[in-house]
Amino acid sequence: MVLLFTSLYLTNELHFTIAEAGICMSFYGIGSVLGAYTGGWLTDKSDITRIMIFSLISSGCILLFILVATTPVAVSSIIFLYSFAADMFRPAIGKAMAAYSSPENRTRSVSLMRLAINLGFSVGPAMGGLLAIAVGYKWLFIIDAATSFTAGAILFFFLPKTQSDQVKKDKVVVSFASSAYKDREYLFFILMVTIYGTCFFQLIASVPQYFNKECHYSEDTIGWLMGLNGFFVVLLEMPLVTALEKKQKNIFRYIILGAFCASFSFLILQLGNGMFIWSLVFILVITMSEILCMPFMMYYSLSKPINERQGQYSALYSISYGIANIIAPIVGLGIADRFGFDVMFYFFVLVGLIAVGGFVYLKKKRGDA
Image (tube, rainbow, N blue to C red):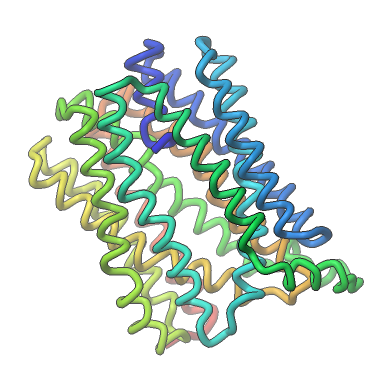
């Protein structure tokens, strides 16, 4: 609930401009990149359970400091530290999923994790919108911190220790030639994921501002709309991915279609002219983009490396989203502030099509039918 409403908190409560809010939100991406890189380095060397617990507890503590921050510099610093701590979690959970699942059920394992995330995302925005209206934005940060502490406690008491113990024993020396940072095909894939993410993350970075400033929706209406994204993912992703998983050799076909849906969704918003029905259609189309892209992109990431480089590959995948989170608010809100939301929508239609072209190239390079 926090990431979705932070930009509105900055403009509505702290009275930052839209452009200032965009710059502050970009520090989430900077912290995410560095946190994912650090988490990936630690994941290849340390106990993944400890990394995940430390990430959850420390990010929850840091988030509480935003309650007393009132300047762009202070807010940006806290957002940076929060995302740095929070995104150390991602490479560790990527390695955990690779360890606890088999190649045959890995895509479904990814979808199950995403189902859990989207259960939270279907409840969080709706709850956040109601809280923002009823008791104020600051309670969003307090409750979000409390959920991080709770998740850390659950991991500490219930996650099986066998895999973490095995990580300590598997000290294998691997040549740098096997490094993720030398895998050109994977690096191009990461670039395309970054471009796609920059387009998709407008759902969080700029679309709430559009709904609030141009469509004049209240916070609870925005929360319900965004919550529908998580609800549709929970409802549709697992059965759809289970059906598509039988044709894993064609995963880029689904990724290409999903990237096209992201591009098309912004055309819907532009042509919809602020009508509520088209806002609903936008949510449905961009949700289909997420369902078709993200499970199969993560499956490709997890299927690439040998065990000793799992942290590197998972870190790069997380870093791609971190970079997208840097670019998305600066570019999206910057264009909207200077040229208006219509120009911004056309721009991201083009960005989505660039991602489509890149994934088509990868599909042909891999020789997929």
